[in-house]
Image (cartoon, rainbow, N blue to C red; front, top):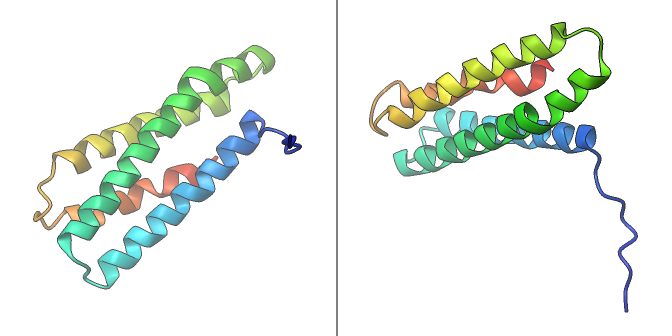
Length: 119
């Protein structure tokens, strides 16, 4: 019998890792755009970004931020994060509503890529 000795990630480590993974997705998407990649490839990459941003924001909003609010006396940074998530969620809705052939779609996910790195 083998024993798994790896310790689980704590919430902060998990979120940092998720931010790094999202940054990589945005970088890959930017490369697809700059190389004039196939529309299907860009659509798939954009959907991956939308899915990850949505799931990540849900984890932060429903689990991480409420726990942090209980510990911190100052809600300023968490309030900023909530505004950023609202902006990211709005962009996800816009990106998903665009047709893959619309000229705005290739650039649409790129601004969202700023959000994970701000915090």
